[in-house]
Image (tube, rainbow, N blue to C red; front, side, top):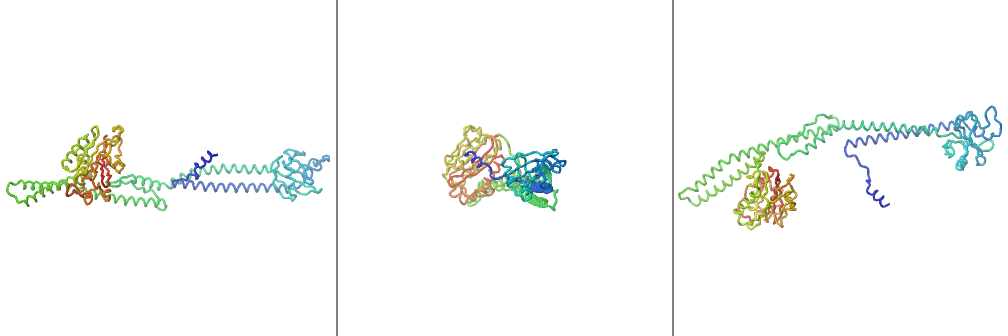
Length: 528
């Protein structure tokens, strides 16, 4: 019993419901048709049974009590009218007759088929005798199930001798006709349901074709990269009837796609104009900026006496022109990456590249504590060595420029995947949160081994309101993160944007995990 109860608890309490509109329409159609067929079938069977039973009752009324009354004359010799063993000349086969005296059955017989003048005596059971004795002698038809024979429709009436005469006709022909109708109705209705189901599937599918196209188009649109660039929307579906509800939905969806396509086209055209302007402006600014810087440096080399104020002004001009030149180069690089220009794809020794970048950072920021944690074997990745060096240098410059003197900066390079011999990615430090931050959650999405570069610092952290846009262009967080930083002034906010663009161009990913006292940038690149 315990096992049965457990199975009953695990069994579904409700039947599975159809999910799609097509399945619901077909299921509703079949349910309505099934209910209609069942109602028609039940009504036909009940009406036929009632009609045939009425015919039997009419035959009983016509037969009267002649047959059971003739049963008491069995002692007389037969006459030419055939009355010896009951009057059977006008009785149909199966007619039952019984005579009761003081509630006791004295005679019981039945007319067999092809009997002629003979009748067949019936041996009634005790139950049959009690059932016959319980019949009211009112002349009305009643149904009695006789174990010795079958189910009969009988009437009981008083005889001339004060006895009770029972006449009955079998209900077997009625039941046979009813069962025949049930079988025929079941087969016909089953075939009708099957044909209706097939026709309903075809009809509903044909009627919902515009809606199916709308759903397929919506699925394709949802899979398109709509964030940026040129987007080719799927073609429209003009094959619909605007007078129907499905047709109106399809027409509204097509109009919406048209508006979305126009908006995406205008946005792409605007992005192209802005990209061309940034590239052209950056390219055109390189020459005058270099000229200004050259003239300032040339003036500083003048052998004659120069007032200190002029020297200071010339130094500032040279410094700012150099800074402007770097900014122009960064903007031109971003414009080229946005245009999708391919980068070099050569094997790059990322270990050597990180060593050189950390050496340069240690020379530029001697006040920081620099720690390097490299993999045992050299890490090679395919890509552009110059651009990857720029990624590492920008991350180190960001850590140096946005943290106070004395901050510990840890650079870790490891391999994640089969090549790591099961070691996984080594954390940047024992207290680094990179293992449980967003950087650990994001991955390159490429199969095989992955080179993982992380730059961790113990500075004040990136403000929470800046973190979502930290890799966007011209994003600066100097008002909080730069408190007590080692350098004055700030960049244009393009360093991390270049990091993200270059890493994305290499098919990798970059992530940030930051909190007060701990900031980690994690770069993942495929080694394949």
